[in-house]
Image (cartoon, rainbow, N blue to C red; front, side, top):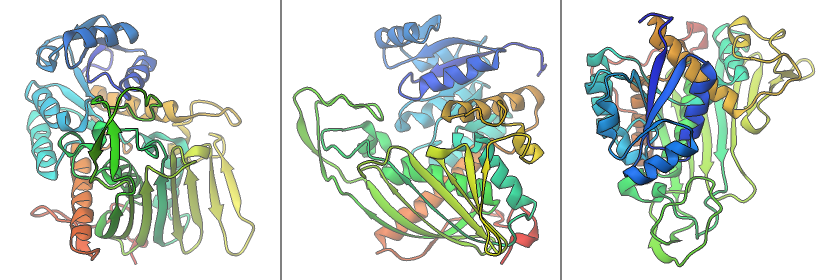
Length: 400
């Protein structure tokens, strides 16, 4: 595709995350947002007006059928990820999907195969990859600056579902899937750990529980982080986990652990990851995302601020502002979208982009966690596809 061609984008599912997709695309400057599709024509038109998008559809098939749209962004609830993405792939469109890529690993495998057959760009927006200091950590590990990596640990803690009068489609297994917190935010931690470390999770031991077993709903789903709890409610039994802790083993021999929860008061978007090597440690905290902590045993610890003049070249390119000028969540999201569209234009996939194949593997990691819990919290291996290798993607110095 010509790098000078102005691309067009259509979005399906104008909910919580949709404005961030549209904002990131518009910041690129060379992509036009031409249409959105919602659950019916009236709500789609209302959303289109709010987002300043010209055309609106009540059926995603009408939007996908338009020959003048190059890229489909799929920001629907989880249960629609598969049919919308599959329809877009079959129409020969490039597809950018919110996570998870599908409801099940079987669906994800179908999408992976369909994307390969269509020969189009396929990406899942694990947006934390786009943070400049996340890329700094990834390159430091790849370049052996912390020595042999042997431990990866962290957490992703939120409180937006603490109130039992908050009910989201994520709590409905028919719409959100059988897993709740692990699929929603645990997938982010797993993707981040694998992306930064260059190693894959191959074994897990999970302990899951549901703290809020009864929620109250008016029948409508609350958007993520919504504070609207008004209206008459009726009780609904919830089975999906809202708290989980997992031990993990990586294919380079490293060990790890993490906890996820969405019912912990005071924790807003507490994503943290620490990676320990024999020479040094690295820690990144999403809520303080403009710095990383570098730990030493033989000299004072360091804090590296986000400053392109001090960062490795491959990471500095993700910092759009000089040192002391703070960048945030929307900027990291924009970086991921920019790399996806670079792939569309050049045919060269940047390392930051999570493909459908990458996301399908993370689905299998989640499958293993669910199987571990169901079996009484025992170790379970991540299922591999025929011929699939678990060899680390970084140099052999990272192997234990």
